[in-house]
Amino acid sequence: MTPSLRLATPHDQQIIEQILRDAFSRYIVRMGRKPQPMLDDYSDPIKDNKVYVVERDGTVQGTVMLATDHEAMHLEILAVAPSAQGSGLGRMLVEFVDDSARKAGYHTVKLHTNVTMVENIAMYSRVGYVETHRIEENGFNRVYMAKNLG
Image (tube, rainbow, N blue to C red):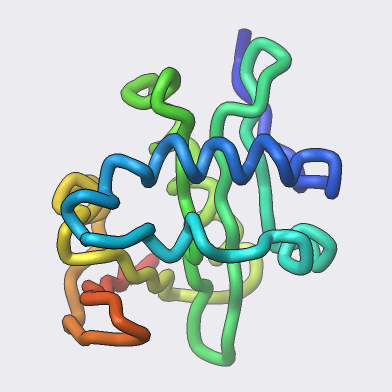
C-alpha cells in the first residue's frame, strides 16, 4: 500500500512517542543519556499542527516535526519506526519538508542532530544538507546543518 502523510492528532501522540523511543534508543549508550527527542513532550506541537505522521498499511510508521522562523523552515524531529527503516519513508519525509518549505516561501531548511548520530549526519548529507557548525548546547553536542532549496 502507498504511504500517506497527514497532520498528527492528539490520538497519535502515543505512537509518535513510541516511534521516537524505538528509533532513538540505540543512541543512549553512545551519548550516555537519552537523546532530546525522547525527552520532549509533543502535545503542544501536535495541537499547533507542527507534527505529521506517515502511515502505511494502516499503521503510523514515521513522524516529522516542523518549525519556522523569519529565515528558514526547521526540521525539528524526523523518525521512522525501526521496522520500516530502509523502506523510503525517511526520504519521503525529507521531501515533504522540502516541499513544505518551498510552499511557505522558504529557501532554506535547517536542522540539528547529535554528533554521535553519524548515520543521521550521513543521511542528511546524502540528501543535500551541509554542516554549518557544531556546538555544545543544553548538555548535547550538536551538529547544525542547512539545505539550500535554490
